[in-house]
Length: 257
Image 1 (cartoon, rainbow, N blue to C red):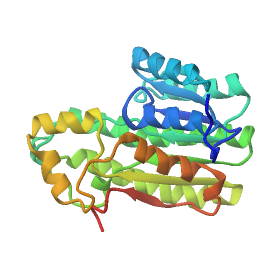
Image 2 (image 1 turned 90 degrees about the horizontal axis):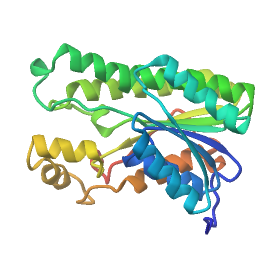
Image 3 (image 1 turned 180 degrees about the vertical axis):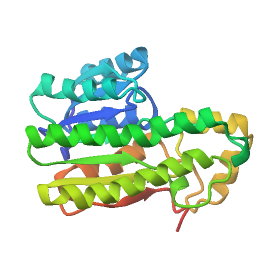
Image 4 (image 1 turned 90 degrees about the vertical axis):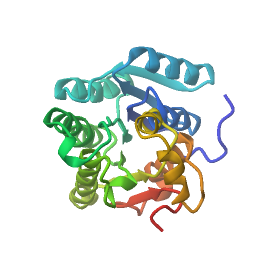
């Protein structure tokens, strides 16, 4: 494998949720290129297997575990698996998310709202608690990044439940940064703007023209590729961001400038 000159995550053990596709898959590949040993977690084994095999074919170290983020026992077992495999945990990206059918707030069903809560807010909290415990017990210090959204930082009338849960992630990030900073565990979040993921493409199918509309309000005038968000997460997790904690880093092409 041709390693990156920077080696941002050289020697670190990384855990990535939602790693079967989109930003999570891009992050898993990037973290491995940057020198990390990576455990990928998601619900769909076929996707996980593909990404893991790609990383290994490129000379990286990767394994996967099937994990349902809506199931607390499954999530805790996935974090435990990292320590079983590598004896430690240094960094984690809590990235997995679920969408909600776009539409007015009063048309969001209670079931959709509850599912959004379970995956987009409760799961990052559960994962972070398990990750902090693993870092404490092994590496001692480390870093965690959550994937938030620019939709958490403004009115989000078409995706109200999603935006609300991501706002909760921002609050968790700030509180955790204050709580765990004295131990040397940094907690940050990335807030992607319009990013070329399956979730965005599904939204555009349900609301034709939404990508064009979002791009029109973005100074850079285009969608982000998942790799661009992964780069920001990798930096936040690296020792080069050693004095950065409690930050919600917008990766949004200037949308909220």
